[in-house]
Image (cartoon, rainbow, N blue to C red; front, side):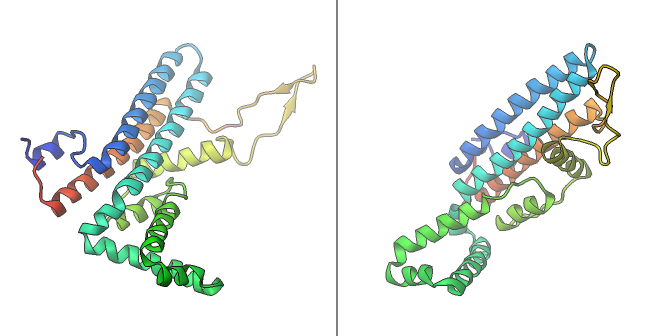
Length: 236
């Protein structure tokens, strides 16, 4: 048997079965980000522009892994944790209250269903709540803090994570294009001259940022796993 403290210190896979799928997604992300970062490093001596493009892809992959890992944990673990943790129940109850208020402002059909068929409607309401929590992209410090808070856990983003999320959003939503862009130029032959119109990126920073997002996902799984251990009082 491995004591819980040692299990956490060594960063072993989560003990609680509800986090296994999230952990598999994390491993997939680590594998893909590592491969992309290695490819970027090998391209750096041949073609810096291509290396930077691959490193940008690694950054996006790191963000996708963070998003997918946390959402899977919400789907598989949140309602189970609520059954053990009264504070999580209260947070979910507040969200349900807001959902019912919106329903009453419309036609009250959901509330009527809860009264007429309480068991089935309750499960449907909880499923809708989980779907709502996983519908938004978890690519901002605000969203990450919200998810940690629902699980009853604190969260303090590092400066590196903030930079990683900012850069990820610039790549995904703006193609990493400088604003304002340089003047568009054409050569004498009428062909477009590819001026440097994208943000300059340092390969080492992109590598660090992609790994920071993976580490954030890993820490989230470990904290949820530890919380289950405290609530259920098991040893690993």
